[in-house]
Structures are given as C-alpha cells and as structure tokens.
Amino acid sequence: MYSWVSNEPLAVRFPALFGLEKCKTVTVSDRLRADGTGWNWEWKRAVLDGGESAELQQLVALIGVASLSNRQDEWRWELDGSGIFTVQSVKKKLQVQRLSIVPYVVTRNSWVPRKVEIMAWRAELDRLPTRCALLRRNINVATDLCPLCGDFPETAEHLFVNCGFAQAVWHVVSQWCKIPPIYAFGIRDILEIHKYVTGSVKARKAIYAICLTSLWCVWKCRNEAVFNNTLWSLQKVIGEIKTLSLLWVKARARQQHLDWVVWGAFSLYKIGW
Ligand SMILES: [Zn+2]
Image 1: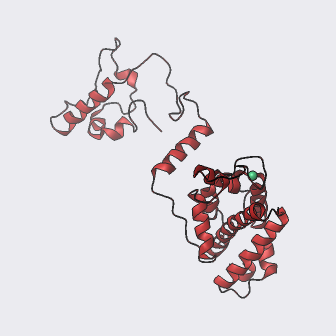
Image 2: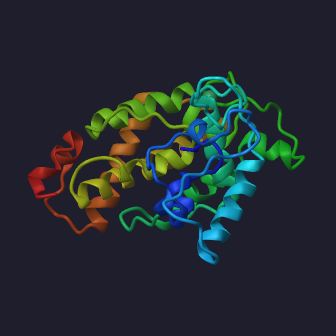
Image 3: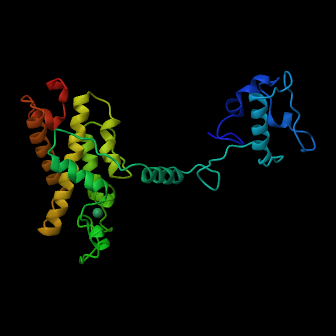
C-alpha cells in the first residue's frame, strides 16, 4: 500500500511531528492554504531545534515535490500504468523479482534418487536439452515442436507445465494425492506445491516426492517419443509415476507397511503418516 507522497504514512515517517500535531486525524486539505501556496501547520507548541526541526525540513522537502489537484482521492494500482489492478502486472512483478534474487535452490527430498532431484533442478533452470534449448545452442534439430502435443515449441516450461499432456498428468496427480487442483505458472510452482498443502510432514514429503517423480516420468516419456518414436498414453505415465514413487519412497523411507493398496489410494493415515 502506498500513501499519497511516500511509501509509508507520514505519521510513521515523522513520529516527532506527529506527536506535535494538534489534530491526529487531520487531512491534507485541512493543512493546505486556500491559495495552495503553503501549509497551515497547527502544532501543540513551537517546533524545537534538533529532531523535530530536522523532521519538518524533510517533510517540507518531501511534500514540496508532490503535485496536488482538486480531484477526489482515489486508489491507484502502482504496478500498471493504467492504475487499475491486473493479474498480468502481478505476474510480471513476480517474474522480475524472481530473476533478480539469488538462484532458486531445489529443496532436497531424500525419498527420491539424487538423479531425480538433479533433473528437476536442471528443468527449473531451463538447462535440459529440450528442442528449443538445443536450437538456442545452434544444434540442428528437425523441429522445435513439443514431441508430446506437437502444437507448441518445446521449452522446459511448456513440456512440464503448459503442455496439455503435462496438465493432464498434474490433474490426475492432484486427484490421486487428494490435494487441490494444481495450477502452475512455472516449474518452480510444481516444486513448491508440497509447501502449501495440508497434511503431516511425512504426507507432504510424499507429495513432494511424487511431484519430483512426475517431472522425471514426463521427461522419460518425452525421451521415448523423441528417441524411440513411442508415444506413451497418459495411463502409462501415471502408472510409471505411481510404481516408481512407491518403489523409491518405500525403500528410502524404510517403511515396510507402505504397499500398493495404501499408496494407490494415497491413504497414508493407515501407516500413521
Ligand atoms: Zn506439448
């Protein structure tokens, strides 16, 4: 939230002066001279040298640069030139912030093999050899189109997030894990789902392991299509995700009671998770 002249209320920014102000609920127009040439301060007593007068100097300098009009006050959305809220402007701001901060660190998950974590990390960094990535490196590929849908250029984000095939995978995964539908803008959103779902620590770790396994299986499915010309059905990919994740989690979580019945229904409460 921004106030009219600063990114915080004047009462917060100039606490000594606020203490001196006679009317704590005063408006800007109450203090503005009718001819707009200056200010009608109403202090409880004279402003003293030192902190108070320093604040007053800063305040006058700050409001001196503000331009005031006779219009009614209104709220403006600062992230869009039109002043009106748009989802697009929030998305843009988030993307810029993501780019400016330190590289994203994929949270470790000891229930999947290291190679799976590394693959997910490379996907998030856009370092997988997708068709678009190869073309960027001037490597000759016959087409840049996604091998799973054939409709859009194959970037990592398309393959794992926007592709109709990937969306179908996430739809089934969310139903299986009994979590809200997965709506992702990027691979990072997939990697963070486990942080925002309800459930025990172990159940959320299992959901994270499943998301990592799903990324692994979509990549495997993509490689089958590219190198073996075989298009897996959605059912086959889901079967692969369930089987591999059970195998890995059962062994790595050292959980003998975890079996196909519990895992297939995702009824982890039965084994105390
Ligand atoms: Zn696609």
